[in-house]
Length: 446
Image (cartoon, rainbow, N blue to C red):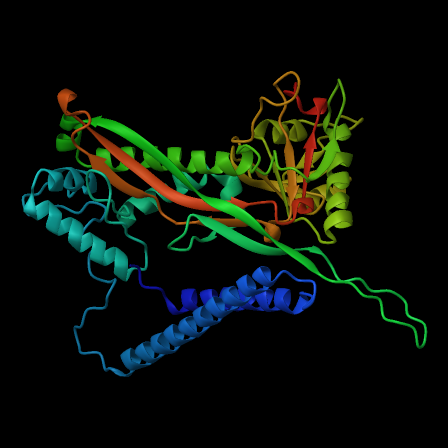
């Protein structure tokens, strides 16, 4: 069980209060005569549980604050060691007493072979992870499952983030520790107000609510490596294997958010549709479609979108667009472009994935995980214009790693797994997303 920080507890408390107030509002809106008694009882039971959770988190916050105050009151002895300042078990370049590189993956393997020293180092690493407030999972089908050491996460972070630009743009929330499904309350019919003449009856309208359900997903990757490589690498296996697993894990997660059947944001039912149809696509013809996508969110969601996501080839088309005088429509310096002539977009970062610039005041993220096999010709991509605050994306955090020693033993190989859990829904406010699609989004020519 992981130990939460004061900031995490305060965040949990705020979320729990919102859930409690939402349930209270739903109870208050129910007609005491017409409402189904079972629905009322279910909501009351839910309210009671949420009230208990709010009280429990408040107690945890109070206890955490008292602990922190007590620690601050203790004078530090000269030469004392602070938690987190001591060398970690697994660090970049760390070596055992015999001078060999201290490999996380080697220790995972050798602990399965009965090595007491390897198991001790893994146990010490698990305690360090708990102190650092990162989750540790300790059960799997054939070996221990652990969060990778920090030096690997540091190396993998750049590699992994570049493989999941859309997911990172959403800003994932912590996934709750238990449960495989989530129910989010939402209002489907709002209160009705109307003009009222003096002495006349007030307009009557009842708020109607329901629940939006979505499930926890598992994303996983594996890598088979030889026993020789595992035993004799110093330290390439940890870095190369870790990067490969993390990149594959990140790509699969991001692809699910974008393209998962019925749930992915590009295939979600009820979003605003912007059709871009032309046999001769150009940057100039595409530009008005962004305005249409933005205004549809304004009109139907009554709020502003704050993100545009497109495939790298679509951004390249915009970069290559020229006006009638042969001047580029996208400039690397937005202010210089404004002073020279009207720019269509600003290019701030030349990268194949991630944040690249802005269009009509919205940041643009390019993501190669957007499908390019859509449409009648299976050669079209799509463009997403969305409001991030309306999207729910929960993630467990760093992927967990385990090792299997028996499955490939006949070939003197071992199998390394990385897996994690996440949950998401874009259906809470489908109209907060516009999807630009059509024959104008076929492969661009230059």
